[in-house]
Image 1 (cartoon, rainbow, N blue to C red):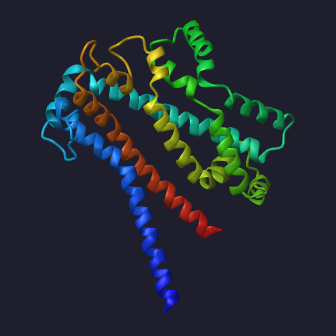
Image 2: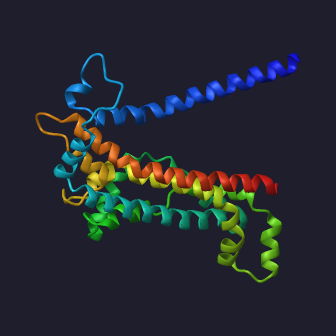
Length: 278
């Protein structure tokens, strides 16, 4: 009886901790919605308002009047989707080779890849911009997509995942069947790597969607910028309608919530399937 009571108490405490963590996680989004649905005066009122107001549509219309929201949304969707696809393609190929192929210089090449991971992003901005300017890509979508087509973090993450997830026996069996590198990667590697690819895809899409510095540098036409740069343009020179800016920020994160819900379900489902196999 005491054991059941103690187990029930631990369950209640565990659920209470999870509920508290969920509320803390959700509160910033709720607070953003509250500020976006009130006026700027209401935002700075004391005590602060904790319930949504009635000015959400008004603030959203101001955003549509202030910037080319849908145009910036289209540029951001194309850039984030393209970079995510290329990262999943190239990083999974490189990771599969590093994890399951023994070739001369493999260890040295992998350490070189890891070394590039240690370079701060700010140090790479100037040489990347000079290279893109020499190619004549500054101001185009290629400047947003090509530099991010592969990254050291993705290769490292997928290589570590492939080493533990892909059995060597499967690779050897496919070689006996006459499969080459790309067929092994497609038929043996990718089905096993799907949970890791789902995480990498979500991470990459969010990173490109929320990136502000690189699009600000390479997209020289103020009328053709990503969503994060466009929302920043809502700030006035002398005064700023804070509720309008927050409404723009709220509108910019709504697609991310959908992507996260779709990707996380896929990620969890594949993890569960993988656990049942093992």
